Length: 624
Image 1 (cartoon, helix red, strand yellow):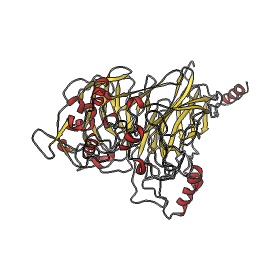
Image 2: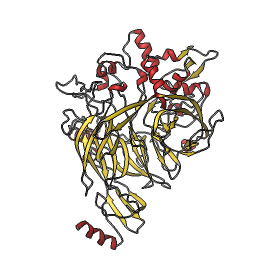
Image 3: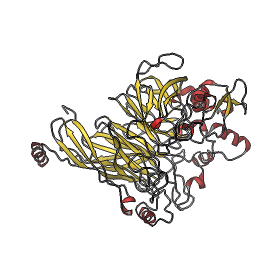
Image 4: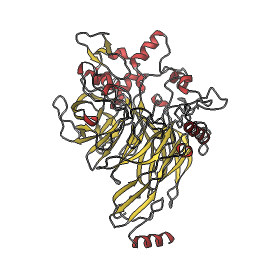
């Protein structure tokens, strides 16, 4: 009754000032205005997740709300939730045994890198899923990668939550890691998404698990890049296969909290930052992080089933190099396959030399490509087209003439009302700059470098034809690519006093994206070494610059961005931070003070937050 009286009196005045939970409003949103957060000033502010932002929402019933945003910690990478005896970020082997930290007795190797996240309601219970990308530090503060190996297992944790029905506050109840033992483990799990049918589609940034290099190292008796996976994850019972990594894993949460994991080989193998699934439940886009990568599109045979379909790669046609460039997009068909036939190849021990032959120099019948982590051109013929298309997708895309010059293609988002996707390019550099071609296909992308990167807009249409003139069976085919006003970063000529290398009022190294159709807003989270305090931005059409909503603790990357406007009647903006304190203070007295605060607040950089922003306006549909 008390809440009803407050709501009634406020609405009669024409203005509603919402509580955090948003239960005070009763109408559909007409528009949302974001009020910028001040930048953190003191070392104490710079060392924490900081916001002073507000949001004003106008409703179709004439009411208006203004709410302060606040960051809420759900749990940290070192937190033990419920009866779980291991910290949330713990690494596990294929039998779900925690991996021991060699630098501290009784300690486990922990990932300080929470990333892709989502809230899910399953059979009346509320769950939170989150990736942990990699382990940064061991217990003694030394580098995990240097001590144990460059590619370590990733993990995903499932946490059951309770929700306060009035305030919306979330409380962890129990937690368990997801078992990847039956699918060959998980490595470099970065961003993630939720499919339209309600499963968690995580990722695998297969930067350096190159099939050619792994095969060559093993034949020569040298340690290969997957040696740590072989030893720590598989216990030397078998060698880790490069072709089990770089494959999209789909996690289904079953009633009761059990999970089922499927790896989708048919979607193609690459360096997935994430995947973006279109509303048709068939069309899936793959941005591939790293250097000299392709941009892929998969069209499933059946809605809601990624186990078989047709794979394409984009070929860009540059129209202009100004302001991040303007490109037309043509799609090159790579092939059709299903998970089962590809998994059979991998289980059968397929190697790089079973798929390609390299002449080592220009030769008749061989295609010149420059793809991924390879430093010099390769001159290839294909022995097995299906294996090449789906297990060596980046190389095969180059052979077929697709663009393999994308640099740091990160998060994606889709605006259903505008019929457009957004793609974050964290660093417009290397292969995307003029004069750095992708082999005989030439210089598809010819831009001036912008290390701060930008966010591109890609309109989608139906009725499009592929490079062979065949109609593509999707209404969501990207046809062009350019940077909207306000979403291009700007490099500074040199670092400022705080080490910032990009303009503070613009995006720098945009990474995770989320489009909210309800708020008509694109949210952009940074992964930047160019801003000391990475920023979560809000951008709407017509803005000349985005609005800062949240600043990460110094040195930390913002990750796992997902806005869920109505979970049990309450809105949440999920965002995490990883590798807190990843900066060098040098002899700067202010930065040293910031590092002191980081050390005190974040367990000497061992802790990393998984959390959410409250204060977003509630979304209430007519008749609800």
